[in-house]
Amino acid sequence: MRDLVVVGAGGFARETAAAAVAAWRVRGFVDDNPALHGTIRSGLPILGPVDSVAGMPDAAVVVCVGNPRDYTARQRIVQRLGLPGERYATVVHPAAVVGAGSVVGPGSVLLAGTVLTADVAVGWHVAVMPQAVLTHDDRVEDYATIASGVRLGGAAVLERGAYVGAGALVREGVTVGAWSLVGMGSVVLHDVPPGEVWAGVPARFLRSTQLQESTS
Ligand SMILES: CC(C)(COP(=O)(O)OP(=O)(O)OC[C@H]1O[C@@H](n2cnc3c(N)ncnc32)[C@H](O)[C@@H]1OP(=O)(O)O)[C@@H](O)C(=O)NCCC(=O)NCCS
Image 1 (tube, rainbow, N blue to C red):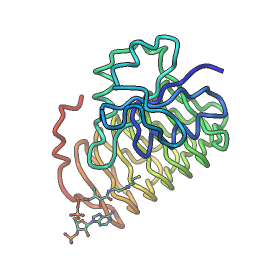
Image 2 (image 1 turned 135 degrees about the vertical axis):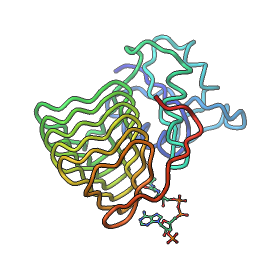
Image 3 (image 1 turned 120 degrees about the vertical axis):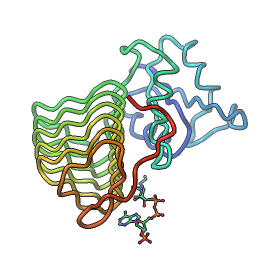
Image 4 (image 1 turned 180 degrees about the vertical axis):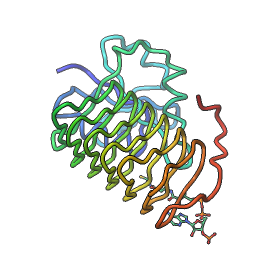
């Protein structure tokens, strides 16, 4: 078993730590909130600030920050850390299913009950919450986030940094553009251009994302 340090101590970070314990020796969390340092969350210590992972060269790392209001945070932290790719762990809950021909990149997390049926490509630093179903030939690019209960039809594409909200359905062959956000419970029937928020049944344009960070 290799050591693992989880970056962040919020909800997704603690879910990831719980998913990792079967395959990793989880040392704890790192977080930039000084009030957390030295405290315990979900039974694991907060070891120090985020940049302290540089001083733990023998531990693998997974970055678990971000939420629907700030889903570029994961990319920002990865860019700031500048770690070599081999430092990043791929965390797959033992109750997730990764079907034949499917690949999951470094830094990515699959939580419990997620199913990748066949020939699904998941990039780097992708977050997949519980009970998501990614079907044949789906492509999920780096930094995308898939909330719980999402279903992607065959050959759907989530471009870099796209966020698909809880329980949303994406029709087969449809693309969600880079850094776009699909609202919870939406039914996405048509391609979503980059940088837009769509929601509803069927999903329609709601607004542009107005992301503060430059996303490329
Ligand atoms: C789509 C979303 C980002 C919109 O948030 P917002 O910009 O703050 O927008 P508001 O809540 O002000 O809603 C704006 C309008 O869109 C509608 N709307 C918002 N979310 C919607 C959704 N998921 N489906 C349908 N309509 C939605 C609202 O009813 C409102 O309509 P109105 O102007 O006619 O009253 C948000 O509702 C959402 O779904 N986020 C994802 C949440 C999620 O998946 N969380 C999982 C985290 S683990």
